[in-house]
Length: 85
Image (tube, rainbow, N blue to C red):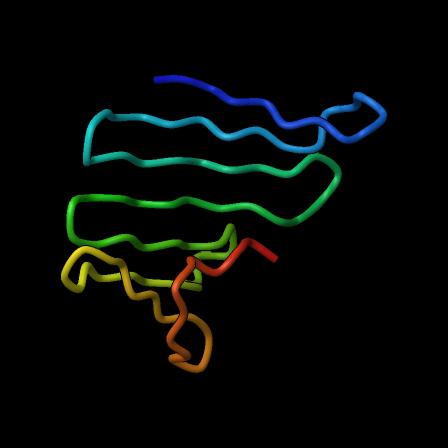
């Protein structure tokens, strides 16, 4: 388990991410300071899923060849995971 802290330009804490697991299987909890944003990201070799802090799945990704293909809101296809909003 490890925690990464992210800071604003003025040095204040903006968010933190705590990750459990290693290698290809990880669960990460992300929380933004003074905000309702954040949630959980589940990662494995062939699939990634992101759930916001209200329990809604906001993005799912599947391995397609060497790349991940992500589906976000409205089932839009993207090459990156939907950020927490």
